[in-house]
Length: 125
Image (tube, rainbow, N blue to C red):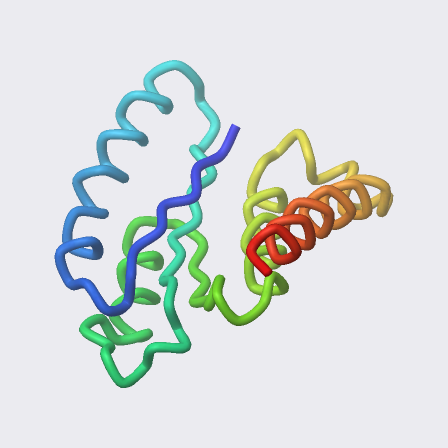
């Protein structure tokens, strides 16, 4: 199991609430297991850079300090960024590492995510 926490780069408050939420998740999950909790932080709305309130560097530093993955994407522009996020999360989950090395796991993830996001795009047209 892994977690994806998303904030808007245009909303400082959505970024500022991440550290306590991540600490809560880690405390709850790592108390149950010796393994690290896979967490990926995602800055969304990269296409709205003119409204940016949180820099990419701040996002990267937060992720680094809390041992999380980090991505900045624009869900409105393309689904490729979202696919990268889920692939990055899958790489952080110990049970999926072997499947990813074999190549079968990522194909399934990509197929599923492509189907979901392609359907979402056609539904909104």
